Image 1 (cartoon, one colour):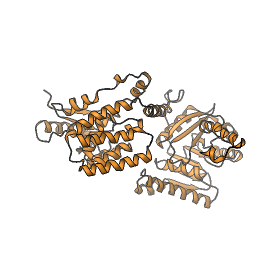
Image 2 (cartoon, helix red, strand yellow):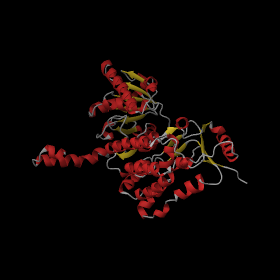
Image 3 (cartoon, helix red, strand yellow):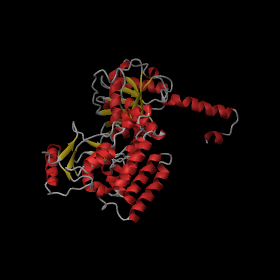
Length: 472
């Protein structure tokens, strides 16, 4: 009785992709049978199925999730949906036809860019590129998708099988040029990561010998890459980053993170301005305090330069700069700290200066305010010695340049409250950092790891080894 099929996700998301824990399980056990037969499912059951299918996309359609939509005969999406194939960041390639169908829907140059850069696009751009057939609101999504599916079933709309299309691949010479350019780029940016060249090889297979041949090669290469050392390492990093935000006694005790709307930063030097930039681009207001107008102006100019740098990198739209800068306020005293939710001390590594700064922010900030320091080595017990708010003291150690580097060390003392840690973990996620909670010991985690590295270098210098040789 079924005339057509609409494929949708649950809870406002289409599908975030294949369960990455399965890759980890394969790495532990070597059991490759845990991988599904994606060719049989996506190509034979879905695309070649006897009834038309339409993907109703909202929220996320990433990795295997996006590949499922491309095995359907049409795609209806909300404008805000995120679409992408980020598999290369895990040391693998798309394994359910993504390397073949995406180029046939959006063209070779755009597909190569999306895969090599793990670049997400929104639903509205997907419509412009040809990946999405129609846009609508979340409320209308199922209704419009059903209508589309029935139209295909009744012959009122073309029954399009993406794998059979060739109109967007360009001429053989154009395809060759696009792939050659991509190969040169990969040699520069990912010389030791086999999945990048493998992805291009598989795309080329489909261009030369047809989509079906490309899908078969894709699945073969995908299965070869899953147990590779590169995939093992990158899957481990991916899962470890997600585990870093699960902290016993903090994230599992039913606390709710408080909203951090406004942050005070003391010190507008290299670190302070970088931290301010990271907060501002994430729509968090910043009050920047400095000792005199000249130094304050220098800090504000550094933030503006950081924003221009982000525009050049393609991670900030140029028309957002003025709006972002409007969230910044400069000050020479603590009067504007009366309503901040967090204060971050980012002055030089001088213990008396840090201690007096903490005494000041405890005095002028509201009672709920988190008192954070960006120190990389000094004990928080020493920095906060003169305060009476030990439960609010926490380390927020960013890495230079703070608006680009992804790590955030969250340092806790034996007195830091679970609420303060949870709030800072939440801020870390908002500003797109990987927050790692560490103990209050000399050097914390990163500097502590560097100590023997530096000591080894100095030991060799002491033995008379040429410093350029050591450096190499």
